[in-house]
Image (cartoon, rainbow, N blue to C red; front, side, top):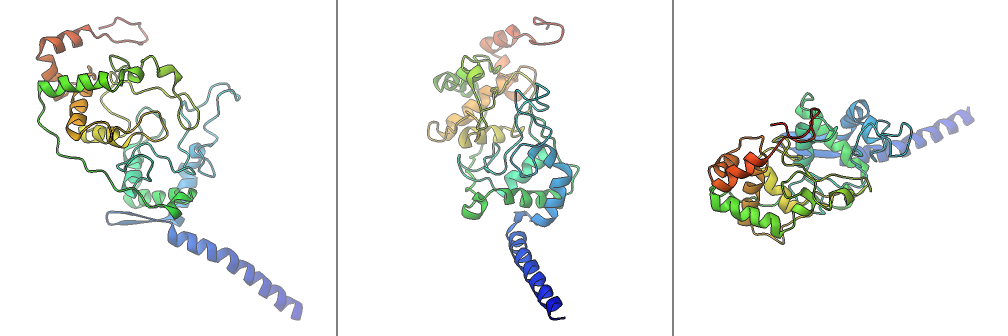
Length: 296
C-alpha cells in the first residue's frame, strides 16, 4: 500500500512538472487582432491539421511537401521553401526591417495568402481560427519571448497622381538601381536576377511587374509603399527608408504601376496619354507563353 502511495505521488509530481510549463506556454501564446484574442492551444490543432505539411512539424519550413534541390524526386514540390517560423523572419510586415511583425501582419497574410507562391489564402477559416493560428505560430520562435513587435511605420496620404510623379519615379528606378534585379522593363530579368538567393540559400527571382496586378504583400498602392519602407526580410529586397523621402516613395509607386502593362490602372492610363508612355506600352509584347514570344 505504501509503495502504491509513493508511486502515485511520484506520478502526480511528474504530471505537475509537465503541466505547469504547458500552462505557462498556453497563457503566453496569445495573439490580439481587433476584438479577437487568439489562443495557441487552439491554434496548435489547426496548424497540425492544415499547415505542417509545408511548414514542418517544428515550424522550420521543412515539411514533407517541400524537398530541397537535389533530393528525390529531383524537383521540389514547392519552388520556394515555406516560411521558417523558428527564425521569425517575415516578408510581409508593416514594421521596420529586422523587427518582428505585428499580430495583424501575420493575420493579414493568412487572409491574403502570398502571391506567386504556394501559400494560399485561408479566408475559409473563421477570424477566430486565424487569430488562434497566429498565436501558435509565434510559439515556434524564442524571439517572441524576448522581443516586442516593431512599431508600424507611418504611411502618409498618397499625393495626387501626375505625369511628373511618374517621370520622377522612373528616374528613381534608375538611380536606386532597381533595374539591376527587376530589369529595365520590370520583368524580373535584371543582370543580377540569376544570382539572388533568399535567407535559406534558395534561388529567388525578383518580382515581375509585367505579370498580373497583384503584389506579394498586397494589392494597393499603400501595400507597395510599405514594401519600399520596410523591405522584404529574408530576401535581397532591402528597405529604402533611409534612402528615399516619403514623397519620392510615392513617385516610385506610381511609376511601378505603369510597368504593369496588362493591368489598366490609373497610373498606366495617365502614362499612356503621353507620347513616351504610349510608345512604351505599344512596344511591349507577351513573352514566355506556350505559343511563343511576340504574341500580341
